[in-house]
Length: 272
Length: 164
Image 1 (spheres, each protein chain N blue to C red):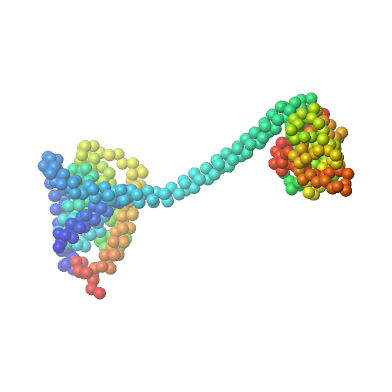
Image 2: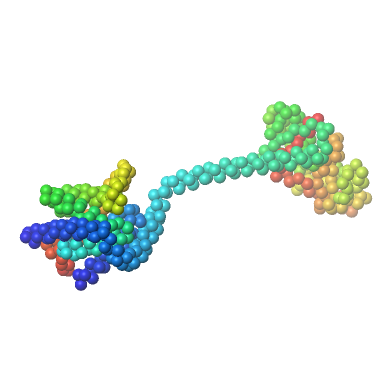
C-alpha cells in the first residue's frame, strides 16, 4: 500500500516537473536561445518523421478505399447505367446509319417512279420467311415486291394491319422466272441474255432450273428476276454449282443471293 | 541501460506519432503518458515525455515546450480527478481518461496556434466530433494496453517481469 501511494506521489512530481520544464522551454525558445537544439533535433528526427508519415499516409489511403467503398459502388452503378445508355444510343445510331444507306441506295438506283414503304425487319427463327413491321395500314398488299435498291428480297405473302410476312426466294413455294446474264453486264436492258430459267426455293437453297443446254451460262453469271408477278428487273444473285446432265435437256444450278437475308435491317416494299 | 530504453522508446514514440498522425490524426505521445501513468518509474516517464515532446515540437514546428505543456496540463487534471475517482481498470477510471484525452485534443486544436501567433482557433462541431471519436479510439488503446501490461507485470511489482 505504501509502495503504491509513493509511486502515485512520484508520478505527481513528474507532472509538476513537466509543467515547470514546459514553461522554461517556452520562455527560452521564445527568446531564441534554443536554435542550436532545434537544428540538431531537426537534422536527426525529421527524416524518421518523414518516413513514418509517408507510411501512415499510404496505410491511410488504403483504409480510405474501404471507407469510400459505398461511393465507389454508386459510381460504378452510375457508370454502368451510362454505359447502357451509350450502348442504346449506339444501337440507334447503327439503325439510322443502316436506314440511311438503304435510302441512299434506293434513291441512287432511280426507283423514283414507284412508291416505296420503308419497313424494318423483325427477327425470328424462319429462314425462308421475313417478317416486317409494316402492314395494310401502310397500303401494303399481298403480292407486293420487297427489295433493297434493285436487289430482290421477296414477295409479300401475308399482310396484317401492322405487319407482313415476306416470302424469300429460298422458300419452297417461291417460283420465279429469271434471266441469266454475263457477269460483266452492267446494264440489263443492253446485255445479252444467256438463258431464261426458273428459280425455286428448296431445302438446299435457291435452285435454278431450265437453263438452256445450249447456253453458255457459267458459274458467277448474274441472275435477274424477270417475272410478271414482280415486274421489272431485280437482281437476285450469282450462279453457283452449275451442273449439266448429258441425259437432260437443261442445266441446273444454285443461286448465291447478293443479299444476306439474315442480316437485313430495312427493306422497301413497292406498293405502286 | 535505462537511458538506452528511454532513447529507444523515444524513437518508437516519434515514429508511431508521425505514423498515426498521418493515418488518422491520432496522437501517440499523450496516449503513452496516460497509459504509463503510475506504472513506471517517474524519472523514466519524465525523461521520455520531455525528450519526445521536444522532438515533436521541432517536427511540428511548435515553440519548444508546447507539447510538454499540452501533455502536462491534462495529466494534472487527471491527477486531480484521481483524488475523487480511482484510475484503476474500471469504467469510471476509463471515463476520466476519456475526458483527459478529449481535453488534450482540444488543447492540440488551439494551444500551438495561441502560443505561436497569440490568436485562438475557432472550434467547430465537426472538430469536436472528431475529438470525441479520437478520444474513444485512444481509450480503447488504453484498455488494450492495460490488459497487455497486467499480463506482462505482476500487480505489485510493476518494474519486474512476471516469472514463468
